[in-house]
Image (cartoon, rainbow, N blue to C red):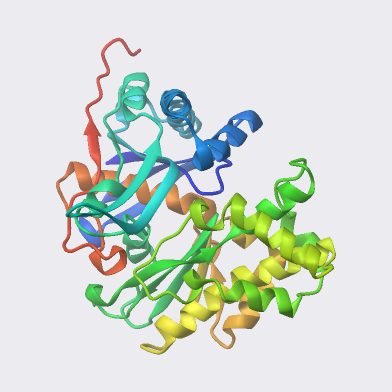
Length: 389
C-alpha cells in the first residue's frame, strides 16, 4: 500500500508528513520513503496549542480539533502533490494528531484505575477533505489494555534497524527523548522501549522564555557550545524522579513543559548562572538522562554494537558531541547513515501503524508500553473519492 503518515510531536512546531510504500506484515513489514515534508504551524497557532495544553477551555479544544483537522488534511494533500502521486493512488492516511494532554500515571476513580491521553486533529475532516480512509487516535486502545499509550515508534524501529547479529539502541530526540533496545536475532519479546526525559523541549523552552518568544531554538547548539555546564544545577536536574523511574514509562509537557522551564530558570538565577551556561547545562541534562537510562536499564542486560540517533536533536551538534562522549566507546550513528531522514521517522511510524490497523494486525508492543496484551490500535474513518477530480 501507499500510505501517508502525519504527526505533530511534543515540540508542537508543525506537521510532519511522510508518504511511504509498505509491504509485508507485522514486525516483518518493510517501508520505502517516497516523499517527506514538514509544514510549520503559524506562530499564533503554536502558542494557542501550548497554552491549551496547560489550561485549555473546552470551547478552545473543540475549535482547535477541527482547525487542526483542516491543516492535517492540507499536509496530506501537499505531500502527495510533492511526490507527484494522485490521491486516488493513496490507500490510507495514518494520523497521530497533536497531543494536548497525556496522563500515563494511574488515578483512582471509585473502582477504576484511570490513565488517559488526548490527541486532536479531527480525522473525519482529514477523510472528508482528502477522500482517503484515515486511521487516527492510536494511543487510547493501548491505554485501555493497561498500557501507557506510548512509546509507539519502536514498532517501526524494529522494521528499520533490527539486525540478526548485532544488538542496537535507537535513540529518538524530539520534544521528549525515548530509546528502543533491539536485541539481535528474532527475540521480539526482549525489545525494550521507553521515554528517558526531555529532548529538545527543555532547551527550546529556555530559548523562548529568555528571548520573550523571539527565538524558538538554539540552532545547531551554537549558544550552548559557548557555555559551561554548571554541575550544581545539573545534579539537581538529574534528581528528577522520572529520570530514575523504571520502565515502562512515558512523559510529556505535563512534566517537562512550561512549568518545569520556569523552575529551571529560577534555579539558574539563584545560582547566578549566565544564559549560555544555562543552555549548556540543560543540553547536558538531556544527554545525561539518556545515558543514565541506557546504563541502568539496557547495558546491565545486554551489550550494544551501536547506537542509532534520530529526531530533530541530531541537528544540534553540541548535543550530539556530548552524547557520543557520554556513550563512548559505543559507536553513535544517525538515521542518515542508513539513508533515512531523521525527521521523517515518526510520520513513517504512523503510516505503518495505520497500515497494520486496516489489516487487523496488532500494532502495539506490550513489552514497551506495559499493556496487558497486544491490541489493534487506531480508529478508522472511511474515505470517499466522490466528487474528486
